[in-house]
Picture 1 (spheres, rainbow, N blue to C red):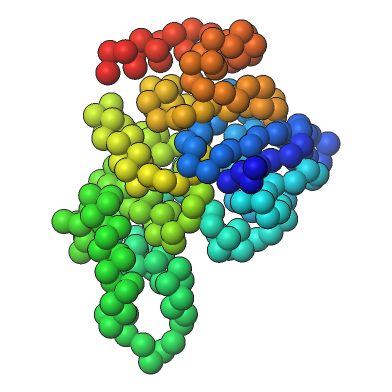
Picture 2: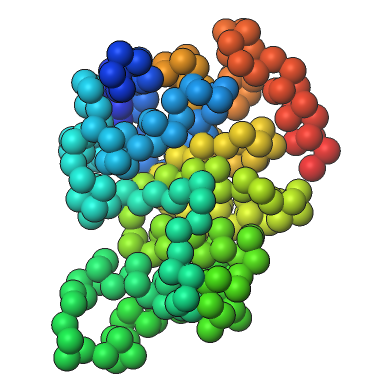
Length: 258
């Protein structure tokens, strides 16, 4: 079987400190996976390794069967993997429409040419309009990114992430800082825009984790100690001892209430 994303004995050291200690993970196409773990477990480092910001010290990372470890972020992106970050990284003085269109251009084969007018690129403009509708920002298309609400900015960030048509999407704490009502709407938005795609997300909100993920990977001290369905992870004694415990019970109660 060819996995959408596969990590084999991935390790990462900074000096004498080993942060990722032989991580193994195999994600099937179309799966939604949440990566959870205590602070300092190595979640952000793992995302940085997958997306090419860091090169692993050893081990391999494969995207649809092709090795990507050690490649530059833009090379990995062109192979079909996109990532959002904890802090929104937008063109503040461009409109919502222009932010999305910038992300769309490369995927449609458009390169810099001083004799071309963006307004004449019908395929790029049509695709941008489609994404704006998907992320529910079509009525805010002409608003500058700097004037968006926090939740709108996060939605725009996701729009940019999916604009290139990548099949594997990485979202880093997409609901951080949102209210409960915003979070609930955002979970549904993520489900809709990643339909048919492979999703990995780092999350601290257990309600989001159990409401979104098909599987959960538990990272503790740089190792994946469990990777299974939410119910199986909830019942895993090693996971409870190492990390979750009562947090899982609270999340289960919150999910039942919702």
